[in-house]
Length: 335
Image (cartoon, rainbow, N blue to C red):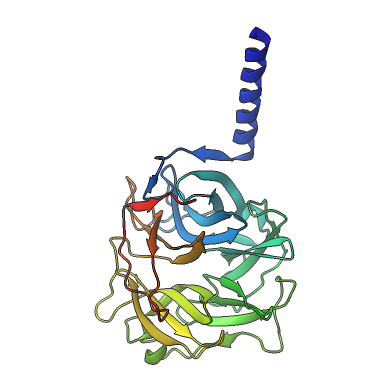
C-alpha cells in the first residue's frame, strides 16, 4: 500500500511537471457556471473561437502587463479549450513574434481554421521593414506549436492588412477577409498559405447600405475586426464599429449577404459599446448553442491596453437576424 501511494504521488508530480513544462494547465471554475471574463490570470483580447470535434478552441491575443511606449504591447498568441463552456484548459503560448523571423511587433487579432488535417493560424504583425502584414502559422494540432510559412501571406504595404478572418465555403473555396478602415478579401488556394494572385486583393464597396452611416474613415460604421461565417445559407460579417458623431468606443455590428462576396446589407447593432475603447467579435455554434465572444477591460488593472475576453450566449431570430446582445456575467455549462 505504501509503495502504491508513493508511486501515485510520483506519478502526480510527473504529470504536473509535464503539464507545467508544456504550458498546459486546467483552469478551475464553478461547476455549472463560468463567470466572465473567461481568463482571469492574464490580459487577453481579440477572441477567435474554433469548434473542432467535441471541443471549442479559443485563440486570443495577449496584452502584456508592462506597456512599451504607452501602446498595445503584444508579443504572442494564446489558446484555451473547453468541452462544456465552464471547465477550460489553458494551452499557453502557441505562436509568437519570436517564431516569425520577418516580424518585430504587434501580435494582433488572429483566427484559426482546419483543412485536410492541418491547422492554420492567420495573424497580423508589424514587419521589420515597416508596415503591417498577415502571417500564417501551420500546425498538426489545434493547440500548436505553429510554424511560420516564412513570408507574409498578404502584404499591401499599408495599415489595412490587419484582423484576418477565414472561412471555407461549401464549394471548397476559402476566403480571407481583413481590414481597417476598408474591408477587403482574397481567395485562398487549397494549400491555405497562398491566394489567387490573378484576382488579387478585392475591395468591398464601403457604402451606407452595407455598413450604415458612421464615424470611421470611410464614413460608415465599419471599423475593424471582421468575423466572417455562414449559417443556414446566409453569410454574416460581424465587425467592430463606430457610431455617428464624436469618436466613441467601438460597438459591434453585423451585415449579411446572399453570397460570400456580397453585396452586404447592414443588419444592425450586435452589442452596444462598453467601457473599453476597442472590441472584437468571435462567433461560434457549439453543441446546439450560439455564442458571441468579445472583450472588455473588467479585470483588475484593466484599461485600453489591458483587456479581457468574455462570452455571451444568444439566439438567432427565425429570419436569421440577431437582436442586440448584452454584455453579461458569464455562461452556464452545457453537455
